[in-house]
Image (cartoon, rainbow, N blue to C red; front, side, top):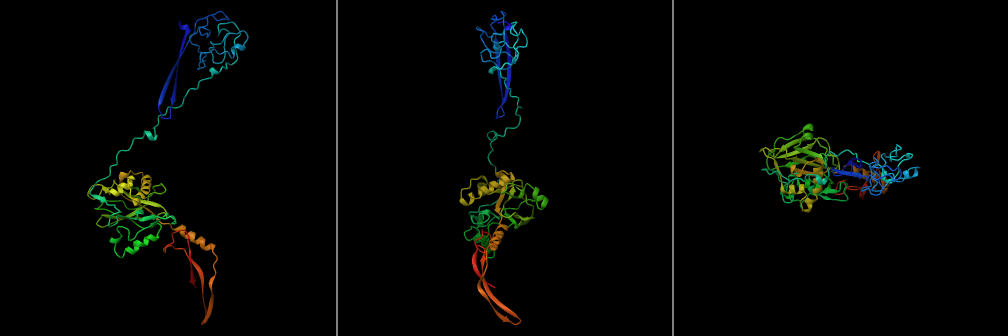
Amino acid sequence: MNQADHEESDKTVYRVTPRGLLWMVTAAVISCGDGATDAVDGQPDANDASAGDTLLFDLDADAVSDSGSADTAVDTTVAGDAASDASDTAATSDTAATSDGDAATPDTAADTTAADTTAVVDTAVVDTGADTSPDDTTPPGPLMFCDSSTSFDYEPLTATDWVGLPDDMWSVDSPTATTGLRLDVGPATPWFASQSSYFKPIYQGLSALDGWSTSGGVVLRFSAALGPLPSGAQASTTSDELLLVRVDDGSGARVPFELERFEGQRSIILRPMVPLVPGARYAAILTTAHTAADGGCVSPSPTLRSVLTGDATAPQLARLVPRFVEALEATGLAADAVSAAVVFTTQAILEPAMAAHADIQSRTYSWAAPPSCTPDGDNRRCVGAFTAFDYRTGGYLGDAPAPTAYTLPV
């Protein structure tokens, strides 16, 4: 095989896979002619595809081989050129009378052989960005909770006193309540018996509510004194140590608060500087960024750790897990970045009142007993009664309207 009988071309195709990997495929297309004499013009044809060629590949500059067969679709239609056109050197047609080595009239029609279609080269930009596929992310390491002498002793199932309020731990699901829950504090509550006689009726009265106050303070109690903490509109909404945030809508919106301390600096009250949204869920969180008075971090209780990690098994605690997941997602905190936390739902305010108002307007009222009138000096005194309705449940307007009729003297 001489130089004239050999042509070689390297075509490199780059493809970008969805995994961001760059693969290179190199194909060497080799065409060898047999140097045989053209049957028509009697001249040697270096790329002739006549019998005896060892490889029948079309080197007609169209980047696609004819897969071992001569293309005859066009060249056989031109008078004077009866040979198979395996030696086209242009992608469309012969451009000179001698392109096939013959003297026949050159073919000027487009070459439409199926194998001559132009190959599409992948010219996409190589992916150089970070691969964020879940299976490529680095698995998280083991959680490293703070262990310190100062702690948040949250053990609601056994503790004889509470360490954080408000707290949805002290609620039950209620399909009739506007918020979907009702507070539940009473003699069965582990810490209820230790409360003073003055506060017991107040705590027990919470059970009429469908959530916690929209303006009340949040209390957290610790085993030892804490260090300096933020207070005021600016500091309380920028600190990474102590946060009051909305969590149910995923916004993590910070709520400004003023801070008060009591019980020898061991306990704190976060007093919101703006009303909380009714029927919403909030979290108060102390993080491991805080340094307690003894110079260490604040250690979360084993029970709080189990709720943060989703390992809690007791039904009352397992019910809290989704709420704490909300809190972590809304704040972007890792579970082991939390030293103390409570999550609570605020009570509905407008919805029950508006529902009762609409029901009142829809009713027709009449006298239950016709009024009777008697003279009273220069006036007349009339007494009657009509049927009215009470929209409260347990003395509290908080559920969907279920009015109870009663007779109201007037």
